[in-house]
Amino acid sequence: MTPTPRIVVLSAPSGGGKTTIAKALRARYPDRFGFSVSATTRKPRAAEQDGVDYRFWKPSQFLAGVKDGQFLEHAQYGGELYGTLRSDVQKILESGRHVLLDIEVNGASQVRRLDSEALTIFILPSDPRVLVQRLVERRSESSEEIQRRLERAIEEISDARLFHRWIRNDDLDEAVESVKRAADEHPARFARDPKDIPWLKRYLVDLQSERQRPLR
Ligand code: ADP
Ligand code: 5GP
View 1 (cartoon, helix red, strand yellow):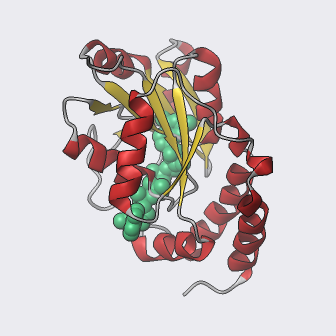
View 2: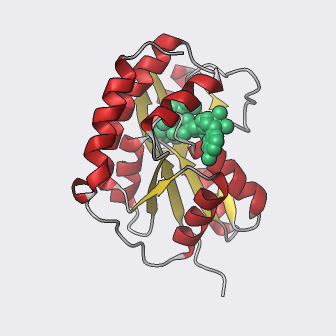
């Protein structure tokens, strides 16, 4: 039997791998997963396409969308606005597929409050040095922006209690299959309280010291 389609929120600190995992899931399981294309006021990066990666909207258009109730959730990140369009989510669910949302932690918490069936997943590599290295090697942000994103990462990891599942993105294939299994499992199971996850405290301490090192 085909599992009931639901919202699957993928959150991760910047560089954690949510975009890569969402793309791999759609490529591998095109008739099981769709992706909601968010609207944002930020500028496109090289190779990003309007309507594919994001809908690049002017701030006035975004604010009008908020006023009209077009967004399921929206939040600010790095001084820009980002939001999930209700119409996109609806369309994908009606096609019988899970809908992947690649969104930050505030948005994830809004979705949790609105939809008790939604599954929220937090993704990150086991080693904080790998997180920093992937972010640097992606070469899409300036070093100041990377510093800001690392600061935000520390806050987001501290907020992780909100999430049903924590998935480590070390081996990409394993991470993709873990998300697939969790999406098909009803009802959502809660991971242990992250306060009880012994490596979490250490992770935050290590990430804090990585952040203070000069970026390579
Ligand atoms: P996010 O969307 O969470 O900011 P990305 O998906 O852009 O993160 O991943 C950050 C960088 O890490 C990208 O360059 C991506 O190719 C790389 N990456 C992601 N997952 C893995 C993995 N499992 N192994 C190696 N590199 C990875
Ligand atoms: P980026 O600028 O790197 O593409 O995204 C920055 C952050 O915004 C990421 O954490 C990403 O998951 C988040 N984001 C992207 N789209 C949305 C959205 O529609 N809503 C919210 N709340 N966050 C989003």
